[in-house]
Length: 455
Ligand code: UDX
Image (cartoon, rainbow, N blue to C red; front, side):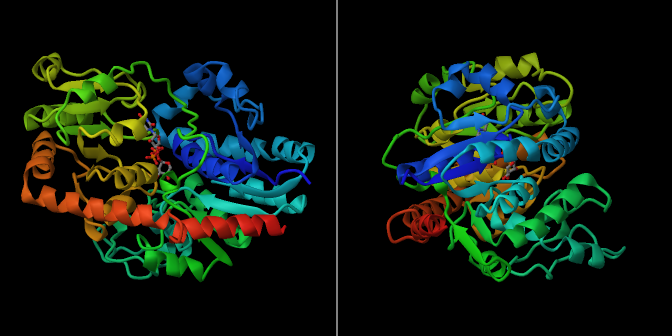
């Protein structure tokens, strides 16, 4: 009998590909053969890493079907998400089924956001399927209560009215709900997508989450009553895989400049603010300028990643006097290896959009956060980071330079900063423990492997 074979289907977003690859790497190190399927981003992978990226590892494949979008769709979160999901949902099932039929020795399929497609195809072919939600449990649980949110929505509900009808969630308000829940339009595509997909994932029975029991215990207890099995396996990046030692990455952006490692090496320990708003959100020029002057006036060194498509509809132009004022203590670039940057000893704080991967990477590196959430589960993550887990402080949605400066100083200089730093170190140790032999996530990976092998 050959090696057990897992097919993984990931939506082509960086925040989904990364944890799926981390899981792939763990399963691969435990003897599985992996076929990793993603689609439509082949062109951007080739652009960022050259043609060898797809060739050098036979375990990475794609469905070789163009969705007709260019990478420019990332310029606008609304349009790109809608088009990206629509085209994927509409076009992916047939080539995915063909691929599965062509592959032999299937043992199980694990997949991310493409639940409807993957689960239907898997069911048709009698392949066992596992849903891997790459967002936080506290963000995900909201999608199971969309009907309730609609029922309770009335004119008396403000953005600060306490919400008590989602089990497991503590001390939350409408403003903390994921962006797809906060829409007023029930015909909204993303709203409907989340609603259908949530129903479908409950049908799938097996849910994988990149979190650990202690971090989200109450939400997880609530989720466990809705699924036959919930495997909490995170943080995936904390697991020790025997080979290879370096995490496998499939980056959708090119690192044009590696000079930052040298620059970071020259900075004092824990002195640098790292600023990165992830792979999806866009900001306005006004917001960019507020962040720029807020950072400049803090007088702390900073490393700032400004994606080419971060500023909606145009390239980012930073004021010349800002660049002159900060040139001795800043490093600005368009993309970096975040896992390397955030774990560098010079990093003292992370100004972030609170994507779930970034939040986990902060925990893994013991770096406290300044949170400026915008989209998807980011608001909920920020609420938990600041209120429940105590390793972050939040900047108002309507960002102003004065507040950026004061929050940076609070984190880097004040007593509050010391307390937050202690809390993140507390969570880093708990995360490590969870992913080490005897820990909850480590043992859940063992259980997952046993369950896949049972098929
Ligand atoms: C979005 C959601 O906000 C997130 O919560 C959801 O689970 C997935 O989609 P995104 O903007 O992609 O997230 O952010 P995040 O979840 O933080 O993922 C980004 C990934 O790209 C991280 O693993 C990060 O390390 C990596 N990255 C980002 C880089 O390697 N370099 C960069 O310059 C920026």
